[in-house]
Length: 314
Length: 314
Image 1 (spheres, rainbow over the protein chains, first blue to last red):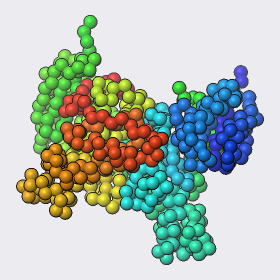
Image 2 (image 1 turned 90 degrees about the horizontal axis):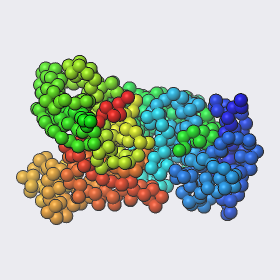
Image 3 (image 1 turned 30 degrees about the vertical axis):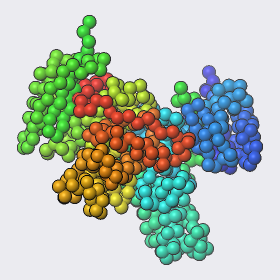
Image 4 (image 1 turned 90 degrees about the vertical axis):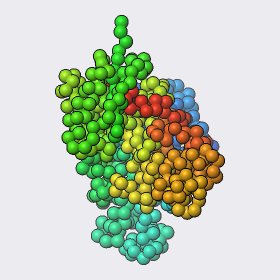
């Protein structure tokens, strides 16, 4: 008897990453194509996805993860990182091209599914995935089910307002959590410290220009033992913990899985996050901190999750 | 064939309210007893609950809703409004006294269940109950299931921090949502306006003392057409909306049900809440506002929910 094979494709701003996943959670093949950009790129994107799927076939199921607001029927309503996307019916157009149904969902929802089934969240009944990248996204498992919400928009944790007088967010509001606790948030905290003449080592790495400071430079300086950078990392950990505390009050999860680009610096942040969580949670003696783990799938999380969408879409 | 009857009891700070609920969602009897207070009140509370249940019997199921953090096995870990409660095994002690299993859960979780099954949230798959009382509590239905979370602590929305530099909260932190969007939050907003020499009508109602201002006085003055009080209500509506937006980003609910004491002033707040929600949500054209309804069960919500706990506890 043959093992079932599913293809999952994760559409990123620069590349489309496809995997073949067997039913036991093993990635047996991986392939990638550049994401078409510019005018007319949407029909080209459908063709790219089709060719990638065909190159990875044969398969039993095909799923696609896309960045942005995806409806429950697989329409991408908007995507900041893809040119000119609006009401783009990925499931319908790709399904027509392939001649079979295709499951489409938000990339972070897919990543949550990947971590829950075959990653850091294996066996959890209540799990929150938070992706700390340029911004903050995520997904939610509650009561042993992957949650999609009414429109399919669950898990947009980054735009939780944590300070209405905070720094402006491109979304038009102020003080969204991702202004503090994402990669760009970490860079902003470091730039503020640089302007205030702290973090001289970070400034040195950035060539003397506070505007050139990136989150990775803070990580590098902190790893070198620079005290100012370690203080910035502590402040960053406080903001991450503040959002996790808010989500804990609402959802009482068994565990958080932290993914996204910043997961690579996990060893630097985990202690400050844990310390500040205990500081910020109400009655820590009655509400022990949920487990915090870093995502296991790394770059493949979205594609693996896309390959699993057929198991949860009704 | 007889219709099933369940007894539900809601334990409040001053009274225990019991109902008999039939399987079709009708309350056929109601009874109440004072909540025992002071030293030695916990054994007396068990006895009060037992007598109330016996007076309402015969029944097929017995459930109890209690204020505070309730574990999944029915232990009340802490309750600000009950004297000396710590690790109080309500389910175990009452079950022993009655000689049969008793379902015990948080009162707001029960209220969410009541509104979902037989109230304002009937038929919803994804529903958030927010109780706006002295503080803010709530419950969560996601994916067609009442969610309890890992410890049973889901829905403590009031301690979501929305401004880390905001006013101090009895919980030890600053800027918790309930400092703004609860009954005591409304009173605080009005007191601040009174100290700033606005809301002279509210001050008049309060006998000239800003410290005596209560949320109900603001409601009264707003109903009389007092412009300053209407402005305070608008500000209050903005804070309620801010929290609802945060919860929408995380959970994408189909609807909010607003309960608690402030539901009585619903007509005053609903328009400001709706207006501010549209202002504060990211991309309102892509994310229509969830329905907002006010709770239907009023004072009986907790008891009706308690009577329904046997339908969701595993």
